[in-house]
Length: 259
Length: 259
Image 1 (cartoon, rainbow over the protein chains, first blue to last red):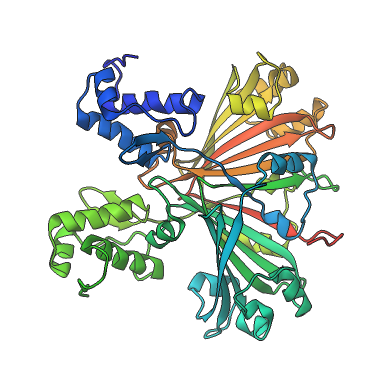
Image 2: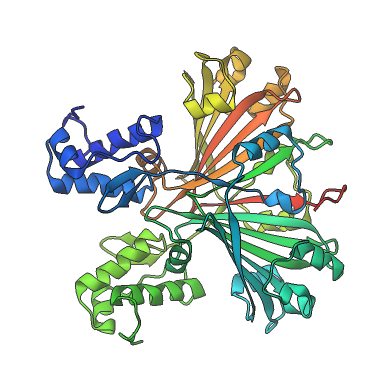
């Protein structure tokens, strides 16, 4: 598979382009071992440096992983569905979401979570979303969720301390009936939420906690929940590595039909 | 501001950590010029190489931009709201989304779009979502949207050719009443949609078309629209650079109250 030198792109980009196409088309499926550096040098008649730059590009795009000393492999993406609507709608309302959830079922994968609870001064963006008074403290439930022993995502939920003080939200344990049910029992039922999705590179701390490889961006999903009176009572911040998640929503045309 | 060498992290990471904190806290606000390499060398007593590695880290995290020969600047993020629910719900239903849209209003920014229409063999993932027969062709409307002359996002909408042949969807012009209204007129009204958000690094082609800097991941938003009979009639693929968008949804607790 010779690559012409006539293209306007440098050689290492052309090699990366070829490999990228083979990955996209499935002719190099997930978990496939790439040719070795020596094999690529021979195939394209280029220097070790050129091969390394080509592989470096694909590593930074998150398409391959390096597993020394074995070599490079096509990255497997086995995403988990992150479905924010589950909060207010446990069962989906459309047959399409139902089918989609079945397709990406996590059946057989072993979930686990680590929970930590703390009382902290809120970060500025959390204080703004919760419309806290100056000096007001928040309770935060910090969770790391694992699937089959691998860290999958981080979920930190912030509550105004005055609302949840003395409730079981303050205990570092799973709440089987859900923190939202506890909020309802405390007289602060959430009836609406605003979701924001920000896409960015991870911080070094997130990379470390989630064991992220190079070229792995994250979605930062921020859900702010409101009571019927319009008071924000919860901000849930989830850090979702791009290689492990697909965020999904179902939408239904309103009956009043504005389109 | 001396940085201790006692930390477990190498010096370049400690310098990057300090700058990152200053950016996060706002003490280095957007568009601020960073100290020069020479100033950073003097401040921390380190080599040019160490300073460059620190800045390289922040560039790859998308926190700063390099504008030679002037130097490095804190990146300004001025996101545009991408609100998929607008498709079936022009006006938001919650006061919170209303306020959020006002906050991020694009008032005064000049929008423009380039449109191209083509008849193509569908990529495999589009064919699967549209449940096409083997060999069936699709019409694709490819749009690049600009704000104030800058490319903001890519939006490619795919339709089964048998559905839209001979309609104005085939003309490379804006459709004031919307492609969805045309679909309705053709007897294929969409009543439901499934949205998927995938987060990844851009392809070289996307980087080029959207003029993306290093450390800029994208959200790939795929919306599949269904008729009341459950037939998929449209797949809209949007490529949303993380530095220019916030994707947002409003959620309302269902009246049947399953939580």
